[in-house]
Image (cartoon, rainbow, N blue to C red; front, side, top):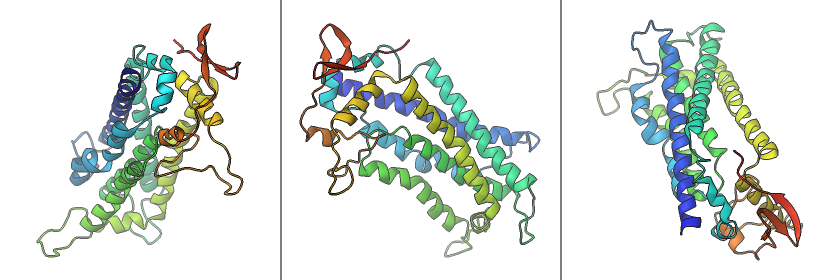
Length: 313
């Protein structure tokens, strides 16, 4: 119970906290940077509907799925490698350092989201190719909200280790719900209800603006590529015991299927170099993987040492 469910609960709670701080720093600091351009008048750059629904609809469900289903290794491996539990007592997954890194990551992404969009829509030419104003307040607010939703969602997908059908649904729900909700709301004109939104017509203007889409893809690349590089560098240079165990299990338990040309999987659990399926592993023979009795921090396969594991200070 302690080595499996206790460690999973700690890991899920830490992932939830790190992401919660990150996504809210990114969301709030975009408004902070906008304050320098509105004479600190408390004018909001976002639509009030987006502000109300950001933590309820657009950026909530994926991290809830992680908090419920996330696993880094299966239950059998967690018992076979009890040293993985040390991450909790050593505060390796959440600490003041992790908190400040989440703050820094959210601040950097907010800078990218706001200034790339602002410079593209406002400074690169306030008029679009058809002579219409493309850098107005409402268009910028709608564009910023969609870019923010996509980036914080993609950032979370980089940390998901166990993909289930529910993860896929929740990850897609935020961006799709943004399109559906604001596609309807921003085009509503007294249809059955006497109501015309402040942002009327902005959805079509922004989604049809080639300059915005250029800024959108540039923002996503500038935000996500460094995160990918950081994770790759971490796995190659400073892997944790969890990373080492996952890599060894991935190498030992993933036979190639030449007839189908891909790695077989079962059910709704998907397994990749970033995602490990506990269900798949339980259906396969146990790996020839054990601890060296004289050195508990070493993983041994067929009496040959294959890795040295230990939490680095």
